[in-house]
Image 1 (cartoon, helix red, strand yellow):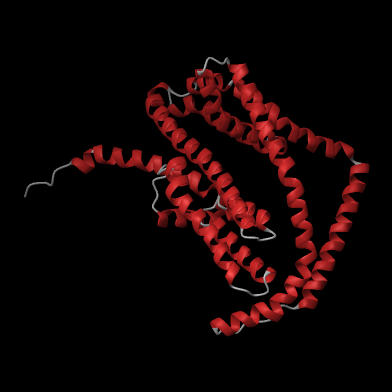
Image 2 (cartoon, helix red, strand yellow):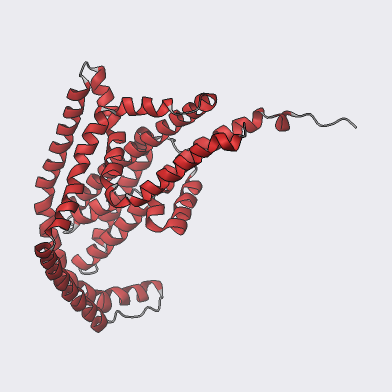
Length: 357
């Protein structure tokens, strides 16, 4: 029988699956988010099951701990962040004037630069139009809420589905993996299973490690900047920790924004900058010597130059989302390249002797 006649149902099923994903993309968000959370939380569930928890008790325990952690963080952080946002809003006009009157002249004097002044009229017009548009948008949102509450309820419903989907995916995770594995053709099952296992090991360790590194760096920066007296220390510290999901980006964003804020807060005095730079230096030392080696290690297998290239390539191809996904994709690609390299070393083409003359 012709092979194409045998394979056409597979191609038809694949095309149908792609079409369904495209047609249902508006409602797939909670399922993708739930699958990602279940993937990240499953090792914790498995660890609890080794301590004689059953599956339901382990999943419930992980969910309870996650809920308590998020609730506690919100209760502690939201009031402080709100006060700092109010302070930032009140000082923003003075900061812009300070940049024109003192910041730019100081840079020109010390670094022999020729910089243009900020157009305060243009910035004021932009801010006015922004707030006007924001007010109009808020009014439109309220109007739409009153007129089309069904759409709002559907969005809220989709978001509220995420923990539900995550819970039930965690309950059936092992069963889902087993049923998926049974669909793999037998002749490629060993190779594909090994590739999937190695990709899962690298990717899960990297994602969980990177999230913990982001959290700890945000805490280190926020606490350190508050200790040295920076009034926007918590906002800048948490922002730097969040931005560290992209390598080196968090450090750059944090130290530049903290330095500008300190110069404005302390009226161009350079002494406070030493404390701020010390905070970020300590953060970088801890990240490079403690957090990264112990929480992530060399999971990706890329040198620093390769990491920078992967991030820049992801940004060039797919924008900010590409920068976020660059390292996870690079981790999977490195696993595949290692297997391809092994296959090449075992091939007859590589091992063939040079023909005798």
